[in-house]
Length: 448
Image 1 (tube, rainbow, N blue to C red):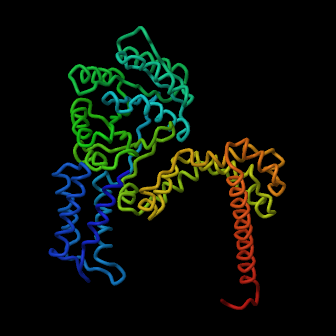
Image 2: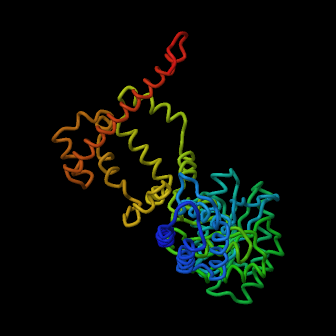
Image 3: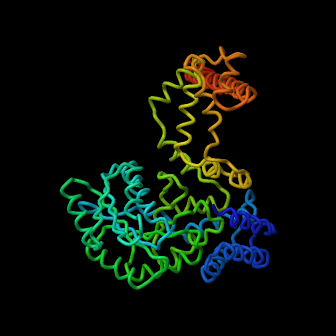
C-alpha cells in the first residue's frame, strides 16, 4: 500500500539542501513536491495545501542537531503531521450494550458483507465475544447466501428471514433472539446501492433509529479514491456514523482516502481491510501508518502479529529440541504454518524498516511456501524426524511425490541443515552469554 506516495515523498526529502537550519528558501521546493505527491495520491487539494503549510510552519527556523540533517528533521515533522492528519491515535470500537449492536453501512461493492464476517471473526477471536450476524440486505440476489457462507467460514451464528422484506423488523427480531441466547454482539449487514440514493438513505436511517446501535460503521472501498471521501460525507450527514472501515487498502497505491477521510467527516478510520482472507482485518493506527508511508516500517504491528501466534509452551519445547540438535522437519512445518497465519508475506516484510522499498517489485505469492510444504509432506514420519537418512532413492521418491525435482529436494535439505547449524550456534552463544554474566557476578570477579 502507498508505494507510489512513499516513493514520491522520499524523492521530495532528498531535495532539501542546507546545513544547520531549515529556511524558507531550502524548504519551498520540497513542500511543493510533497503537495504534488499528495495530490497524485488523490488527497483533497485543500487538505494537501493545509498539510504542507502546517509542515512548513512547524519546520521553519528549527535548529538542526549536529547528528541530524535538515532532511531527517523534515521527515520527522512530516511523519508527526501525517499521523495527526489520519487521526493521531487508534480509536476502539464501542461494545457497550446487551447485546452490543454494530450497524454496517456503505455502497454496494464496498465489501460490506465480507467485512461483516471479518469483523465478526476479529471480535470473536481477539475480543472473546459471542457474535451473531444479521442479513438485512433484502434486495441483492444471493446476499443472504453470501452472509451465510461468510458466517460459516468464521464460525458465528447468522440470523435470516428470507420472506421478510422489512429490514428494521429483521434487525429487531435478531437482537431479541441474541438477548435470549446470551449472545453479546450483533452485527447488522445492510443493503447497499451502486450510488447514493434517497431510498437507501431513508432505509439505513430507519434501521439506525429502530435498533439504536452502539456503533455504526461506514464501509468504503479505498480504491475509489476521492469518491470514497465524498460518499462518506453523504452518509455521515444522514446517519452520523461512528467510524470507518477502509477496505482494499492493500490494492491501492494512492491511498488518498485514508489521508483525507478523517479531516472531511471528522470521524476516525477504525479498521482497514488488507487482503482477501477472513483474518485480514486490522485496527487502524495512524502513527504506524505514517511510519509505513515514510518507509520506516511498522515493527510494533509485526510483533503483535507474531505474539498472536506465539505459544510459550511450544517455544520452550522447540528450544530444548534445538539445544539437543533435534529440530526436525515436523517442527519446521509447524513454524511455516505459524508464519502463514500472520498474514501476507509481502505485507509482513513491508513492516520491517527499509524492506518496503526493497520488496516493491518483488512478487511474493501467498503460496510462497507451497513447494517446501509439498516436499516435507511427501516424506515419511521417520524421514521428517531423521533428515540424515534421506539419501538417493528416498530423494527421488520425495521429488516424485511432491511434484518437484531432486534438485529442489537437495536444495531444501541443504538449507535445512544450514539452518540447524545456525540455530545450534545461536543457542551456544546464548549459553555462553549466560555463563559470562554468571562469572561476572561471582565474588571477586574482575570488573569489566
